[in-house]
Each structure stands twice: as C-alpha cells, then as structure tokens.
Image (cartoon, rainbow, N blue to C red; front, side, top):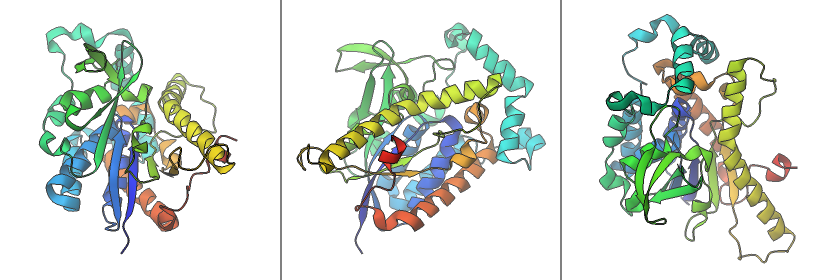
Length: 343
C-alpha cells in the first residue's frame, strides 16, 4: 500500500478550532495517509502540538487521545450545567443566543474599553494551564511530523516561526494571543537579539504556508480553513460587521500566500520559470463554509461544549467528503482551483 504524504496548514479561529479536531480525527483513520509537517496558528497551533505530541508518544491512537484531552480541557466534555438553557439549539441559534446575550455583550464591550494590562495582579491567561500541560519533550523532538508555530512580533509587525526546540508554552500562547483579551507574550528572539513581545499569529500568517516549502517535504498542502472566505449577505448590524472584519483580517495573510503560489505555478506552467527552480505546490482545502457562516465571533470566544462537539462532527464529515472525492488526487494535482479563486 503506497503511503500518501501530506502537509497540514491549520488555521486559527478560537473555539472553531474544534472543527480541525474533527478533521484530524478523521485523517487518523487513514493508515495510508502520513502527515509529514504541520504549520499552525492559534487554535491551529494547539491542534498541531497535540497531534504531534500524541503521535510521537503513541502513534495514531496517541494523537487521537491527546486531541481528545485538549478539547476536553477546552470544554468539549466539561460540566454542561451552565449551558443547559441552550440544550437542543442548533449552532446558528446558539451563535445568535450568545452574540446577543447580556454577559457576552458586556464582556465584548469591556474588552474594547479596558486593556488586559489594567487587571494587574488579577490577570490570568485562561489558556496557560492547558498549554503548560503539553508534553514538550515530544513536541520538540525531530521525529514525527515537523511542526511550525506562527506568531506576530508586536514591534515590527512581522511574522516569527517557532520550530524544533524553540517551541515552548510561551510560543503557543503567543500564537494565540488576541491583544484585546491577553497581555502580549514576551520571548527572546535570536533574530533580533532582543526580548520581543508577540501577538496572535493570525495577523501575519493564518497559517504561514512558506515553512512547508522546505526540501524533503511533500508537495501537497492541505489547508484546514475555519474562517469562511465568502459571505453572500451584507453585514449590517454591529455584530455582523465586527464578525466579518474579523474573518477578513484573519484570512488576508492566507490569501496572499495562495495568490503567490498561483503566480509561481502559472510561471512554471508557461515556461517562464524552469521546472525545479521553485517548489511545486499542490493545494487542497477542507472546510465547511456553510456551517461557519452560521457561527460568529461569539462562538469563537465561548467554547460551549455542545458547539465544540458539533464542530468536531462537522470536521470529520468534511474530511470524509474530501477523502472520498480527492484522496486519489493527493500527490497528483491541486484540488483547489487557484486560477478561479484569483481570476
């Protein structure tokens, strides 16, 4: 049985990263599909770290177990008594219920008016206890899939990629650091020779694709997209406008890289560039834009167990559909028409 090697590019999107959990869970069923490298931002960084840690420790079963542990910690199998009033709601109904609820509205308003630095000694990053519990001995080793974590330098606005022994609890927290909610994460930077502050990697790479162009990695890049690229309806309410601005902002870096890939592929195809001078990149995408357009910033920010589980199942279904339609295309051709996307 020939093994198909792929790279994964995992987007960030808060609690919507549970969709990626489902995608990874389904890919682990395919014993003839091997993940060679992962690039991840924010929730994608958490998913990537859990996947690699578990894979190194216990193979496919270990990766599945660690992902289940991660999302259990994030609320997927937690105490649901506080969410009983929303039991039976569909994701779209829950998104609206959360978005227009008084507690969420107050918290959202507070985040725009009060800096996280104002909390002084009472400040706590709620992700820290989860990320600190990762097994970094397995995350940082050379075996298993290569892992790249993206964060944004606050001072320069440039991307930093953490890999190998550079990956730490602080690196993952930096990748998921939304500046209106969390204090910037400070990490020594050997490139600049100074201690740098970092914010969420989604501003500069959601996720960054260029680390996957290294020699020795496969041509196939499977993007797991959790921020819808298109919304047909014009946003008109404050909540809708804020939500769409968030989606556009966190898709822009990915679209720039995909446009660059399309440009290079065209030059290779028409002979302007000699084959072998640039990487051949085969782009694929696993997404459920129909579901994601029903959700919002509220469901990204509030990891409600029922929504997380629905997102996991949606991720499994989307990956299943992709494998059914395109597994034979892996290693052969792109299944995303970049010319049409940017035409």
